[in-house]
Image (tube, rainbow, N blue to C red; front, side, top):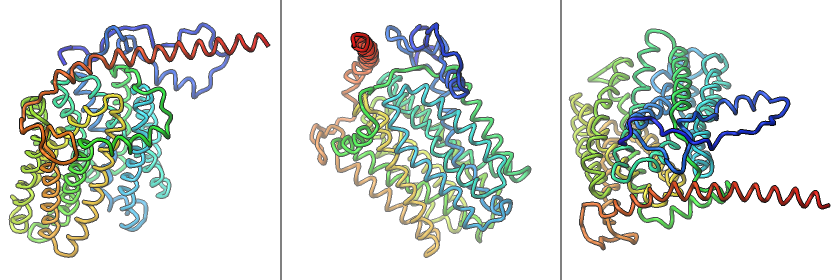
Length: 493
């Protein structure tokens, strides 16, 4: 983080210096060459690997924010989409449903490829594809086409989940949580700011305007990442796709830390979607009767709390065991949800306090969980991240379904009480296993809160790029030698 440059300069590796290109290049080849070209200052040099500067960290956070926002622009304007396309409200509700389904598919089937491919080229391709296909959403007047394009673009809107493991690779061990917190804050900010921007822009112009703005942001992100995202060697060239997917399951069931983090993430994330879904119903009914624009602006309350994550990560998570911050985050959430649930029906201060406490608590627990799981398998961080994010996503789906169902049955207090139970379950999972316990349950190894593993993690981080580069070079040599032997055999015949 000490470097003031976005990426370290030069290596001549990584570029095709062939002097005999094919006579004709297809359009796809030209696009591929331009999208995946790496400027000299961003190329990987094993003798001088890239350093993770604050500028690059902020760029990743910005890209995460406005990439994940694409999933949420439709949420506050479903009634407008229904009217414009001439469909029912139920049909319009399929838009966010398919967006979440597409994102889930991308998490499960694309994110693990980050351990197999070079992340720079893979991320750039996904951003380019998403931005280009997004044009269809801006211009189509066919609702079925709109649904199909929503699903497709959501599948490829997983680039932040490829950047987070890369942050784990690039950031030094003693600053990893701080670096992760900036990108995680960007993710959470994107989920909130999309609702605000979409509601305000649509109120005064058209829903297509916000979609065109989203298109422009995608290409702006593509240009910034093309210029400054550093190249980095893949961590697993020998795995095939299906064995890599299977390895997610084996890693999950062999790692108590990952299982604990996934269960906590499942229960905690359910409270977020349950709250924001049922909040709309609460504020639209007596005694508040707020219009949709004001309900959308309510998300601004949570944006301010995003600034809590980076300083807390630097002062606490980077120095103390992650489970300590997970529990702190759970207690903050529990307090806010209890207050908001039981006073929210007669004073708007309740939902306001709940929004602030929930955003701070969720952010704290998520950053701490990621800091813990990225130390499990440095060579499999994308697969570890996939397991964690699938559990978080399942929690979000469960929170939406349960929250809506309970609100329709018993109102705000009943749905909020379920959220209190979800946080209680997460807290129980956290307390079942201590920070130094090697097994599944227990507190062996002591109660010490200060991290003892920083030197070990730092050594791993120093060795990993060199080993990755050596393996990559060895495989390239092997491929060349294998090709040469094949040519000799062919000539001998």
